[in-house]
Amino acid sequence: MRGFSLGTLSFILLFLAEIATYVVVIDAWGFGAALGIGFGSLMLGFLVLAKLGRNMGEVFAGAGGRIVQLSFNGLFSGGLLIAGAILLILPGFLTDFIGLLLIGASWGLKLLPARFSPVSSPIREANDGITDLRPEEWSSNRNSQP
Image (cartoon, rainbow, N blue to C red):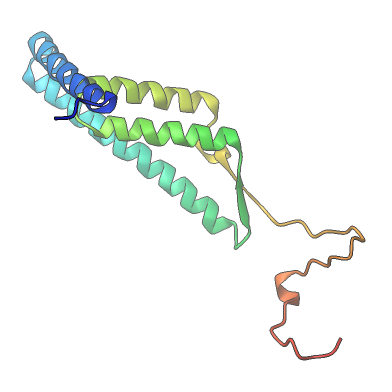
């Protein structure tokens, strides 16, 4: 029989820590409060994911077929936001706390609408023997003589 991997052991320890945290929270605040906090974190996670999805959709729709260039900070911040929202959706107070930390770090970097910026592909002006054509200049007729 194979031994446990580090990932499996980490998952088991997280599961046991989540159960212990539930017991402590229920003992301190009661079952209703623990259930309310869990439901609130679930809704917050879905709201964060929905807002990020709406913002991305608006940017891509407003790009009008142009290339959307994402900065490293935008990608990093968006990744933190997605990871934090997923941790909020998962049941458990430890994952909720880690998720809130990640979302706070993400919002500390930049606000949501500034993460994405549409750009157009530049047309080369150099005389290097290559001619870039705009999409309206493209032609599928390859047999015509210039």
